[in-house]
Image (tube, rainbow over all chains, first blue to last red):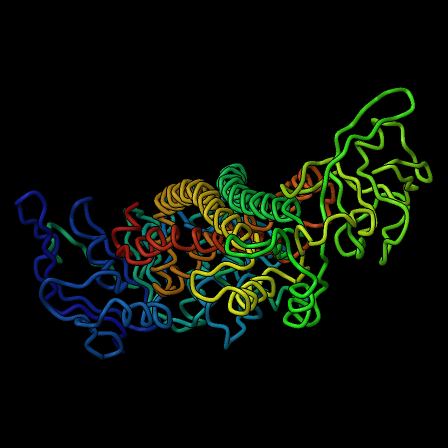
Length: 220
Length: 382
């Protein structure tokens, strides 16, 4: 079942009197339990597409569907709620908060939800990514690979349907990248989620169930 | 997780704010120092104003409570008559009414030292005079009181005799040299019988419980004795002087507080700057928070909590420092540092603290609003 879909999505930017069309009518969908990679040269609109799929931005034209619901015209506050409950993010530069421990970083997306205590799930997720003995370490005490595992655990804390990864292995060496991809593949199965990854990394493509290629804002 | 950790995490904005402030301790300390200076300026200037006012009130002393009655311009007699004194007594009821006769003389010591003194003949000495040595009799029938400066100059001690009008009086009490601007500063107090050749009293002093009662007595006496423009008795009271002094100090206090407030405004501009800088530096991080589903209001609260922390820490430290300053001020001006613990002074610590927190939170509003409303896409780009 398709959990996230773009239908004929167009995104235009206005810069200095010029109109740049970053996405020129993209149809895209991802299903539970599959990993899709989006590849393409830089400037091809990959980040723009990921922003639309991640509900961080809205298209100039076209429709965004989350679990079959049209969320195109949602307000920023409504989109925030959807991101909180349905979408997990993994960034190239990890983006962990330096003043929080690994466990607290994982809990971050649910921290303000005082009705539910997610600390047990945070510990469980960190154990599952092999960091059960690093719960109280701060990010600067962790290696790059460990940081990315913390970031993956953070992305899963609220049991999302979709995990979005922007160059998840971009800052890691090849071996570490491989373990991270193994981790993602396992979690994709265990949690039955859709993973959409934007990458240049050939290695990542090997792990993907499907790949789409974006050139000049159009899927090939 | 311990119970305490669990409890503080019930307020995630506060915990996050606290940790964020800990990331750049020097900057946090400097921003707080600005607030501390502002609070100390407000609170210690306020306390200084209170101390000055209390000191001035003490210096004016009992003057405001006393009503002085003399013979008026339209009186048939030179002084206040016995009948008039009785009439005054019947009008003022409870307050002591002290008729006085006055004269002047020159006292000389055995070794030829001379002192010019005013002489007061009075019976209820204790109502008007406070002695530093000896006693101030309720009924002065024999003996005398002498101001301490004159006593020192003439080498007179308790029990020594002084001569007035050919008669000897033993000094029973030494009176503090005059406080306020009532008398000459050197005074000999003798029984009223010593001035028997004067038939009438030069003045009558009525000692009221406080300034308000004194003014009431003034108006009662005015309506009783002085009808229309006819001034049978001249009635004076310094309560209005006290009021003027009070209102002067109220104005002074306001001016001092204004000066203090300026430094707090400067401090809150510093807070605004620090908060703005720190949210701009953390733009990407705030973008991540927004991306993973942290609401705008939650980001806003977190940053406001940071600003509030700066205000609370600065306010507490500033209030403590001001209390110390207040102790010194009261020690110097009034000789009693514990007076600072009276509400009149303590309230300024409250004002200082309140202003500090308010100013900090107000300064945090714009940076917090700006950070919370930054679009996550833009913020993530950094």
